[in-house]
Image 1 (cartoon, rainbow, N blue to C red):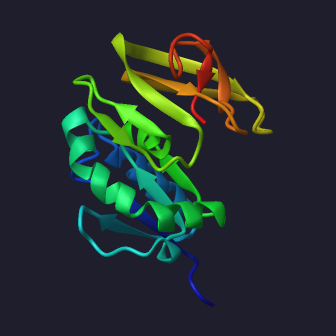
Image 2 (image 1 turned 180 degrees about the vertical axis):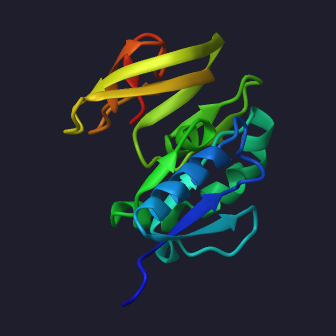
Length: 186
């Protein structure tokens, strides 16, 4: 019998690992092992050759403005192939800066505008102060209970701005994307 195997492409693990994002990868690996699924991590750094079709799942963590600036051109250069793979059903877990760079753009605290892939219609601007603390959101993902629980720590404020882009959930506790519209994620 052939072993089931999951290949995770971890984009920019050296640059985009601000809050211990490797922990997300470790949690995915552990959950796969619990289910008897082999798990391979393919680290993809700036300039590395990478074919999104070789991955079953993509993960990209967060980074400070200077780290996002360092990987932005490389990420944008991969954009067409990554967006095509996402459109073809490749799942991606993107948090913090990874999430921001999947939108239309991210403006750093210093005012530099980093173009994003435009995978979804959103943009991120710097905010006044940080949104830090527990976050609870209600979602319509069809899970029971319909509650997502986590922790947020971000200075950017993300705004969904059109198309079929809608929030992952409605924030019950915490700031969410921007502290105004009660949306969280995408």
